Every structure is written in C-alpha cells, then in structure tokens.
Image (cartoon, rainbow, N blue to C red; front, side):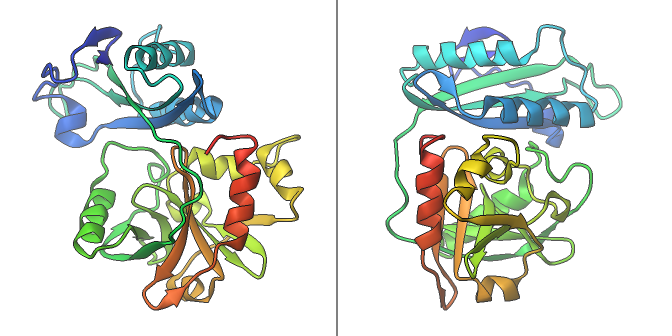
Length: 283
C-alpha cells in the first residue's frame, strides 16, 4: 500500500497523471527516511530540510500539510506494510498539474514504505570512481533533495556499467561534492572532512548529524572519541592522498570505501565513527 494525498491506495493503482509537474519537469522534492521501532530517525532534520526546500521552490502548501501529519502517515503506513520495526519510507511531493505557465498549483504528495534490513559497517570496502559526464551546478537549489535527479541517476547507470559500487559527482568547479546516493567524507591524519554545502552537495541529514555542533549533540558525542570533524573542498588530488573515505546517508549510516582506482583505503576511523553514531542512531 501507499498513501496518496492522505488516502490509502494500492501501490500499482496508476495514480500518476501525465501532466504532473514532478514527472514532466522534475518539479518536486523527496525525503528518504528511516523508521526504527516506530520512530523516524532524525525527523527534525528531515522536516527542516523538506519545508526549507518547499519554501525555496515557492510551493503552495495545504494548511494541513505539516510535520505532524507526515510523521503520522509514515508510521501508519509502516504498520500497514509490516515494517514499523525497521523500515525505509519515501515522501515525494509535487507542485501540481499542467504546463510551466499554467500549473494548477494543486500540491500533491505520496508516501511509500518498505522493510529495511539491519546492517552493520560493510565488511568489504566499496569500489568507487568519479563520474566524468556531468557537473552539478552550485546555486540555491543545489542542496535540495530534488526530483530532478538526472546527474545522479546517470552516475548510477555509469557505476553499474563499470562494476562500481558508487560514483562521485563533480560540481561546476570540477571538485567533488557527493555521490549518487550519499554524502562523502574523507580522513587525513586523523581528521575527518566533508565538502561544505556551498560546494553543491545535497544537505544530507546524516551529514548534518555528524557535523552538529549543538550541546549534547551527535557531534559532541563523537568528539568524545577524539575525532576532529570539519568542512573543506574536495578534489581528486585530495582523494588520492586521503587515508580513508566513507559515504553517509540516513538509511545506510556509514559505508567505507576500500578503493578508488589503484588507491586503497583503510577503515579504522570510519569504524570508530560508525560505533559512535550507532549509540545514538541505529545503523
């Protein structure tokens, strides 16, 4: 089952209209969320990103479309789809129906939910490379979880064709911003870095949790392990000099990279970070 505009419908019911803006133009946003024991992990970060993005995109929202409504419908759908203990939910939103200049602005949303398998830190390091055929723009829309996902989709196709586990995306300045489905971090001389948001990466909620500076925050707990975390630009040269590289998103947590071309990486600090985060965010 899925939920479409507040109503349960069969997942194969064919509800998508041909003039839907998300389908026609990629004019929409989405959130992928993790549910554990009936709770949405990092829900405040998800809803903050979602509603900030909707404001940037100038969506006309129904009065009743709130974080409380989303949370309730995700939890209810997870119960119905038997994944309330451990599940992956996806919320998709669209501006409405019509053309570019005659959209009806009838906001619509879709909630999906599936079971998710609990995983620890990956035993085998991921094999990655840099996707050569796209440059992500750096602008007001760069950090959004946009339905316009073409560079990432093509990078995933390219990675699969080349028998890679993932591919890194370059920005318009030819620097690394993120990967197809994750933010990227690297370790050099015991310090952890990730590209800043002004490099064009998606504003990942797990990324934010790791970088959080607040009192009794995830960052503070991580720093109890003596790890220093910051932001910096990321280039291919830095990638080749790094001691470790790992990818993060909310459903997988941390996945360490074992190889980029002929460069091999370890996972000592990635493992420490994974253990630290697992105490506050189930893996």
